[in-house]
Every structure is written in structure tokens, then in C-alpha cells.
Image (tube, rainbow, N blue to C red; front, side, top):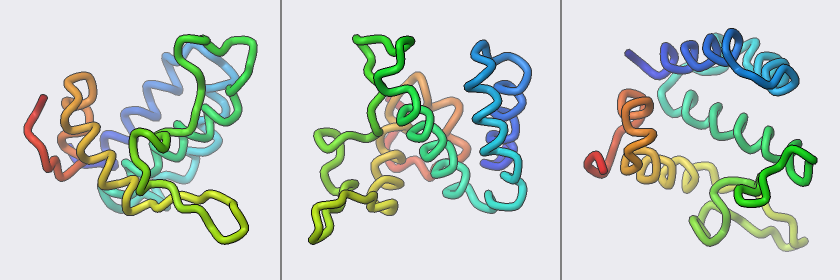
Length: 128
């Protein structure tokens, strides 16, 4: 199974089984053209990362937000300081290469994610 197949499976799961209708519509709208924009394993991982952060951005401070699990951008500065780049004007952007490297370690070492992502990442650490 390659990255695109995994991503298509995730899209199918969300389309048919995701409980939040608004979340489902938003994800499917963003994933409508994944066949055109996701060409590599890296593209698939980064697509899911961007989708996750978009959802967290829209849900932050929403009435449905769990205070024990706030909807923040991932990874935060404490998790990956090199993932965040501060420009001269103070705006913060992502260093996507650093994010991808972080995700390789994080997802490959986390038992909950290893099975899903081991075929899409070049796991640089052993299964945790």
C-alpha cells in the first residue's frame, strides 16, 4: 500500500463514517483534488498535516473544543522549534522540511500511528 492509497482510504473513511457533518464536508472539499496534488508519500503526509491544522484553526475556541485537548497548530514550538520560522516582521510561518522530518520521527515512533503511516513514511526510528 502506498501513500496515495492510504490517503484515499482516509478520505473514504471520513466520507462514509465521520460523525461530524461539517467536519466531513470541510475535509472532503479540501480533498476533492488529492488525486492531482498528492503525487508522493511526502505529499500525502503533508496533505494530512495541513488538513489537521486547518481543522484545528477553525475549531480553536469552538464550543465543542475539549479543554483537555485544545485545538492548536501542530507541532507546537515546544515540540519542534525548528518547524516555526519567524520573519523580520514578526510573522510566523512553517519550515515544511523541518515539519516533515519531525512527522517522520513522531508518527513512526508512536504506536497509535505506526501501522497507518509506516507504509507512507521513510521511518527513521524503529516502531515504538
